[in-house]
Length: 200
Image (cartoon, rainbow, N blue to C red; front, top):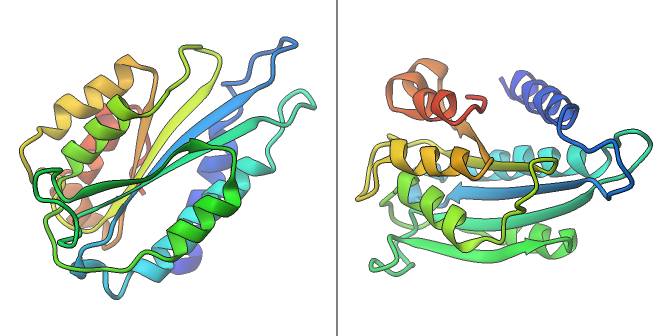
């Protein structure tokens, strides 16, 4: 299962860069927001999920197009953790978009699980509204949201938040940490399809 998941992620990450870079003198840019469920239900899955997400980052970091290396900007959020503010939807931005991959790695691998109110629609909405996404259609803009609870929890309809993402040219990819059938029946597949992304 781990090998199959790793292969799927790396293949998609490599392919996703292909159509997006401009064939001009401009520096290619890739912007990625990582949204990670840190609720208690992720206890046995969190370490593997971090590794998969970081492999995606590393794949994009080594990508080139027309001989040019992209400017890679990563943002990081955690959601679903009871140690976070309920008023904020149990969501925390750990880093805005940054080229400092060491900082992102440090923060990602330091995350721990606790409690559980997983609001996927709301964390996507926050990422879209709070981050400084590029206005250029030539830049590649992606969200990777990972978790294992139903996608439709919380006060924000995920269909509206992924529609807002697409309106800004941001593709949403969903990583369901569980079996494929459960992910398909609990909104993870639907969210990815609506957002022009991949359900993994």
